[in-house]
Structures are given as C-alpha cells and as structure tokens.
Amino acid sequence: METLIDQPGGAVSRSLSSGLRSLQPAAFGAEPAGARLERIRRSPNFADGSFRNPEGARTRPDGSMIEFAKVYFRKEERVLRAPAGTVPVHPTTLADLAKPSASGLRVTWMGHSSVLAEIDGARVLFDPVWGDRCSPFAFAGPKRLHPAPLPLAALGPVDVVVISHDHYDHLDMPTIKALADTDTVFAVPLGVGAHLEHWGVPADRLRELDWHEETKVAGVTLTATPARHFCGRGVRNAQHTLWASWVVAGPDHRVFHSGDTGYFQGFKEIGAEHGPFDLTMIQIGAYSAYWPDIHMTPEEGIRAHLDLQGSAVSGPMLPIHWATFNLAPHPWTEPGEHSVDAARRAAARVALPRPGEPFEPSAASLPASRWWRVAAAWPSGRRPLTDAGEPEVAVAG
Image (cartoon, one colour):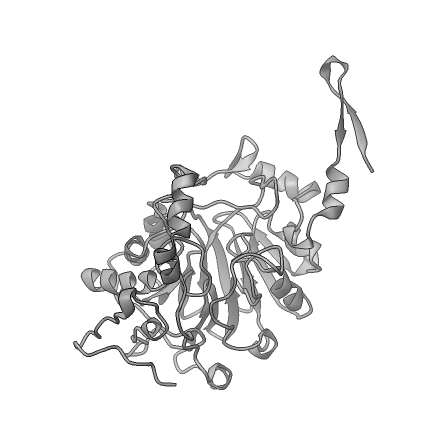
C-alpha cells in the first residue's frame, strides 16, 4: 500500500517502498532493520550512513563507461575471456573426500571463491555458489564456465558456512536455501544476516560479525577481518552490509580467505595478529584498471599472501575468484598464468588444483599443472609451450 508523506512546503510525495519490496526478486534479499540496523549504526566501521573501507577505495568504475564498453565487447578480446573447450574439472571429488585427511588440513577449491576446508575435524565451506548464474535472475547474468565438481547434496555435512560479502558471485540464494535445510551454522559479516533470514535461515544459526569479532564453531575459531571492497544486491545498494576477509583457526591449523578485496596495508596487520597461515586463499581474478581499488591483480595477490605470512616459514597460496565466471575484461587464462609467474618471481609456493581437486597444503608436492591451457582459446590458434619447452597437452583424469 502507498503511504503519503508530508514534505516541507506542503508538498506530498508518495512512498512506494513497501509496494516495490513486494515486487522485487527474492534474490535481492532484505535490508537490515530493527536491532540489526541499530547494531550496524553502532559499528566503528560505519559512518555517515554506510560502511567504510579501511583505506579509501573507489567503488565505481574509473574512466569513461563508453570506453570500458568498447573494450569489454570488442570481439577479438571477448573470445579470450571464456574457455574454448571443456574445463577439466576433477572427476573423483566425491571419492577423494570420503578418505580421511592425512595431515588434518585438506582443501578443495570448487571454483570461483567456493572452497571446502577440512580443518582439525571441522568442515568449513567458504562462499558456496552452486547456482548456474551469479545473478538475481535465472535467465540473465554471468553463467558458469564449468559445472560444480559435485552436487551440493553430495558434499556431506558442513559445520559452518562462511560468507565474505553479499555480491551474487559469493552469496547465492539457491545455494543458501538448500543449506538452510541442514544443520550448518552460517558465519557472515554484519548486516548480511538479513538476507539469510529472508531466505529461511533461522536466526539461531547465524553468527553475524563486525571486523575483529570472532565466534567458535565445531572447535575452530572464525574471525572476521577487514577487506577493501563494497556490498549490495538490489537497486539502491545502500552500504548497510559489511564485507570481510576471514581467519579460521583450529587447534593445529589456520587458514585465511580474502573474499573480494583490493590490496591494502591491512594484510600485514592481519598476518601479524593471526598468522602465519597453513594456507591463504587469495582473490586474483576479475580485476581491471577500471576498478583498481576493490579487486587485486595476481601480482597484488602474491604480495598480499607474503604480507599475511610475514617472515615465518609458512604454507602456500590458493588463487581463487577466477575461472568460473566471466566478470572482467581480462583473458580467462590470465589470472592463472600471471599467478604462476608472480609466485616464481617472489619464490612463493602456489597450489593450482583443478576445480574439485582436494589437496593438503603441507604435502611435499602441490597441484602444479597449468590445467586451464587445455580449454583455453589462444590468438591465431597458438598454444604456449610447457615449462619444459614442450607443447601443452591435455591434463589426464
């Protein structure tokens, strides 16, 4: 129903907010209200009506949108932003996960930023997106470039689902609704709980944290740490939900998940307080010169990894946020290729699993094949050489 609101000067305007809310897609979620909104307003990270970044960040694209559109839709570059062949998803994920972890820490990258971490007896699922599109609509928006390595129902019990922020490629309504019917706990940044409650997650299974707050689930401690990004799912996109990176620490192991973030000095502070880590999961895809402050390049991702680890002997980096959705102008293969090159220059260890390929970060040998080359489109049909100087061949299995 419309509400009439008296305005200064006698003017009367019509507020259609309640009517519009009833028409908007359920995937838009819900705005924080009531006690949740009051808690947001008391946050030291909230000022002048919105959450603030730890360092200044431009959240709107730099430069001319016309120039960006020219680059984005240029035919010869567009073809390179998606695989030309079938992405080699790991074929035995379910069987591999049925075996016990040898070290107490096993990690399975499911694609994009979705990662299952089995840590000291707890199963932690980061940013699960099993939907076909990262969009509020089933018929439009970026579509998956490879299938999920296994059905969500086959994944088995999950102790805690961790969400980094509320963008569609990290918070997927169909996936959350499916998980709402399980016993899992959800650890989310402040304000994000409004979306989950709107989709049927009981309030008593939510752990909603501001930066530097922590909660304990299934014997592991989860800490929301700062990130340099932004939020929003609907039309208005009021910055009333927080974004975060996450530290998960068990009795014997600890890992870091970056969520989405631009590079900032806070990585050193997070590492000094919570590190070193047995594994860092770092965003290295969907970057662009048009939004340099809110996503990292592979080179910046390696730098963040080293900041987080400090001077201690530490675990490898898992590149995330790439290969599954086409979200930026760079070629599909570039995040993987540049991560390998940057890691070599920095003498850093990087794990390169295929989607669905479990690995243990402490293993002497990590997944290292440039598997994406099998499916890549190359200019003029050229394929690069392997590191040994031989033509790239298909990845077995």
